[in-house]
Length: 557
Image (tube, rainbow, N blue to C red):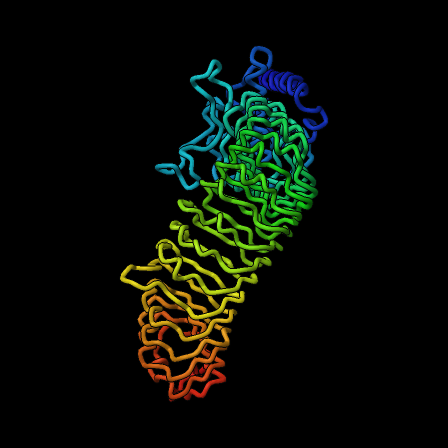
C-alpha cells in the first residue's frame, strides 16, 4: 500500500513539473536552492488542495506563482517543509536569511484568494486595512489575484519572474518599505492591466526595465529610495496614463528625456536626489495637469524654462541644489503655487515682484544661496499665507522689509542672513498681533545699524533670534527682549552693543544658547544665570563683563 502512495506522489510530482516547465525554465525548477523548486515541491507534495494540473492548469499556475513569491522574498525562511525534508536529494537547500514579519495565511489550505489578513483595528500601521494577496469577488473571474499588498513586512531576496504569471493583477502591487534587492522582473510586462506599482524604500538595483512603460494603464509608479542606476528610459513616453512618477533618491544618470513631455496626464513628478545632468526640458506646454514637480538635488544646469509658468495647476516646484543660472522666470500665472524652492543654485537678477501678486497662495519660498541682487520686493506683504521665507546668502541690498510684511500672520520662519541689508530693524507699529507665529528670525551677517527695537518683545512666539555679525548694531539690550519667554537661541555677537545684562534675562527659562561675544557690554553678569536650567552654550568673551558665579558653567562665561 505504501508503495502505491509513493508511486502516486511521484506521478503527481512529475505531472506538476511537466506543467510548470512550460512557465519556468526547467533548469530553474531543477535547482533545489531556488524558490521555484521549493514552490513546486510544496504544490506537488504538501499542498492539501492537490489541484489537478490537467483539469485546472491555470489555477495551479496561479497558486504556484503566489507560493514562489512567498519563498523568493523570504517567506518561510527560517524553516524547511516536510516535503523538502523528504526530498530524494541529499543536497542542501539555500534559504533567504530573513523571514516575513507576518505570513498572512500564505501556503494555507484555503484558496490563494484568502491569503490575506486584516491589519490592526483600523487602517493599520502601514495605512491598509488588510495585507496579502486579494481577488476581486465582483469581477467575471472572482478567483484571479488582482492585487498584492505587502509593504513593511520584512520581504527580502528578489522579486521572481513568476510575478508575471499573475497576469490578472490590475489594481496594485505594493512592496514598499522592505529589503527587496535585485531588479524589477522583465515579466512585469505581462501585467497589462496594472495601474499601481509601488516598490519604494527597498534595495532595488540595476536599471529600470524599459518594458515597464509598455503598461499602458499604469497610473502610479513609486520607485523612490532604492539604488536604481542607468538612465530614465525614453520608452517612458508610452506610459500615457501615468499620473504619479516618483524616482527620487536613486542613482539615475544622464539627462531628463524629452519624452517626459508626452505624459500629459502627469500630476506628480518626483526625480530629486539623483545624478541627473543637462538642462530641464520645456515641460510647461504639455504637462498642464502637473501639480508637483521636484528635480532638486541633481546637477542640472542652464536656465529655468520660462514655459513652467504655463503649468497653471502647479502647487509645488522644487529645483534646489542644482547648478541653474539666469533669472527667476515670470511667475504671475502660477495662481495655485504654494511651494517654490530654488535655493543653492547660481540664479541671478532680482527677486521678481510678480511672485507676491495679490491673492497668491504661496506658503514656502526658498531662494537662499544664489546670486540674487537688488532690494527685496516691497509687496512681500501680499503673501498672506506665507509660512517660511528663505532669502539668505544672496546680494540683496536696502532695508529689511519687515514693516511691509505686517499682514504675514502665518509666518513662522524668516531668514535674511548673509546679504547686504542695511538700515535699522523696523517692526510694524500699531495694535495688531504682527508676526504672532514667528519662531525663527535670522538677520545675521548683514549691515544693519541703529539699536534693537523695543518692539522685539511683541514677537512672543520667537524661539530663535539671530542678529549677529551686524557691525553697526548699537545701543543697549532692550528690556522687552527678556519678555520673549519662548526664546531658546539668542545670537547677538559681533556687534557694538553696550550697557549691562539685566537680571530679567533669567526670565528666559528655556534659553539653551546665548552668544553676546565681541560687543561692548560691561558690568556683572546676573548670578542667577547660574541657575537657568537649560542653558548649555554661553559666550560673553571680548566684552567687559564679569561673573560672580563659581560652578563649572561659569567657565563658559
